[in-house]
Structure formats: C-alpha cells, structure tokens
Length: 172
Image (cartoon, rainbow, N blue to C red; front, side):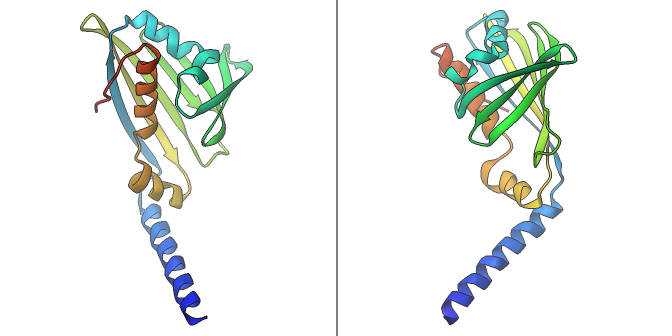
C-alpha cells in the first residue's frame, strides 16, 4: 500500500511540474515549414483547396463534412486524430496565398494556417505558417516538449508530396 501511495505521489508531482512549466510557456506560437514540389503552383493550389479530396492524401484526416459558407468562403469540419475541428477560409488569393483558421474558439487550441505558394525550380515551393494558440497549460507542455509545433505541418507537406508521387523533405 505504501508503494502505491509513493507511485501516486510521484505521478501527481510529475503532472504538477508539467502544468507549472506549461503555464510559464506562452499561449501563442508561430511555426513554419516549407517543401518543394515538381508541380506548378496551380496544381498545388488545386490540391490544397479541393477540400473533399483531402482525406485521400492527408495523413490522419479521416473525413470532411462541408458546412455553410462563412462570409462567402468555404467552411468544413475535419475529423481526424484530434477529433472534430471546424475550419474556415479567411483569405484566398489563387494560386499564391490561402489562410484558414480553426473556427471554434471553445476548443483548447486555435489559430490560422497561412499557405504561400511561389514558383521554384520548375515547380512550386509551399510554405505553411501556423499562428497558433494553445490554451491549457498541460497541452502547451505536451506540444512544446513531446509533439512539437511543426509535426502536423510536416505530415501535411509530406502527404501532399505523396499525392503527386514525390518524396518531399520539409524544411524550416
């Protein structure tokens, strides 16, 4: 019984330390990743804006459910490893710039993804910049020290490459 209490106290202590460290981390962060593709910007644009086709190539994305447009722009719910996340387009300038945001302020995290496409080496460079917010201190700790701020972007960029039969290596 004493051993169980010691183990429980250690676990509670670890969670408390994680919470304290997480509380000291900023809620907002900015992270960015880029990749080069052999496809022209128009082809990459078509792929990243074809919402209904995303589950076929995006790792971890199980399904898409369309919502009514918001301010005349597309909105949808993504179902994946983090549950259901409503997304809305904030800005669209084909085929150069797209800004999407998490459209539910009640979620424990939120923010925008900015996609910037530029012609490069006979193909296209795509940079994704996340301006995010993680509200719970424990989530901030986990994001900073276990998952990283860029892992989802890297998976996205690699999945897009696989859609075109390309092996891309995201960079900072």
